[in-house]
Image (tube, rainbow, N blue to C red; front, side, top):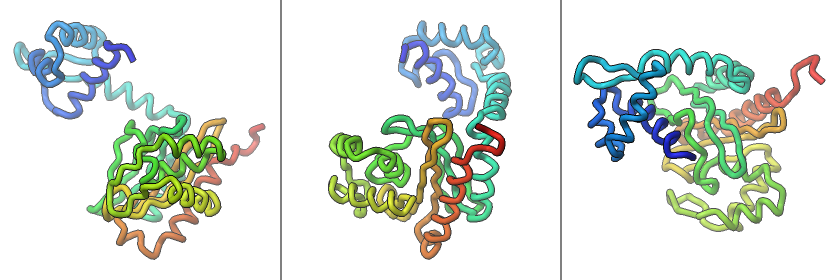
Length: 248
């Protein structure tokens, strides 16, 4: 990725993190970039109407143009438009967090994150990547889409970092769990990535692309509900994979 693109994205994410107007010197200091480099990006964003100066020496802040652009983009996202109704229904029925991610190679990006109404919850930001393939149900779902040769190569590349006492740390154990998940149609992470967290994921294919749906909840709330959650999750994935009526 080019430096100018990275810096522009860093600028936008900085305002998300800081939640306040920032001066040119603030931006330079926080991002650890030369003032001249920050000035070029700031000037371009200001000229395009994405950032404005609050007052003389009062710092800069994003305009609502960014919000309006994001709203239009979100409202016309073909994948989210198709999936959101079914995933909201799943979230409401279970009252647990539901996530949608697009798979790309051995990675994935979260496109949708629907939270539970309950105070104790698992949160995942849209745009975050799927990490720790060996310890997350979404990661295992990605591995479950591979053929034997691809899976073997992937297992060789994984860093089996121990995240909790339950994290799988061997290729043989993970391969066995992946095969069991393929047979069952879903993949489980019970305390393997975060102590006290249970997640369950299933993959579906739409328009030649792969996606993962995940339900996440504290382990004590998921206890005894796994068959119910798995059944509803796989039903949603089957519906999302199915071609709309009348389509060739």
